[in-house]
Image (cartoon, rainbow, N blue to C red; front, top):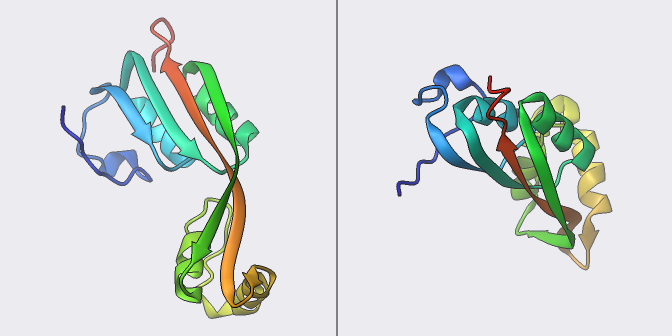
Length: 141
């Protein structure tokens, strides 16, 4: 078994062939789901951990030719950030967020920091879930 770490935002930049993998673990999404399913062999399994809206992720999975979707929800996750810069990087990398490192978004970021600071600690509570899906053999892309 070989583990490979690669960015998945642009499937043309990935160093892999179409339908090269039997199993894919996705830590990001839902954009990565589209590109990862391209790399998954028919009958292959993809699984991941997400905090994005479940309906969005499940829709992307179905639209990408994946089926037999299973999810298991964790009640909550408490994220604790050592400083504002780490919070900025985290929320800016979210698929729905603004780039909070830009000056135009600084006021919005300050508001987020204030909302999530408790006893001088920056905390963000989220729920997470694990999902698993199969690439259809008959309807492979």
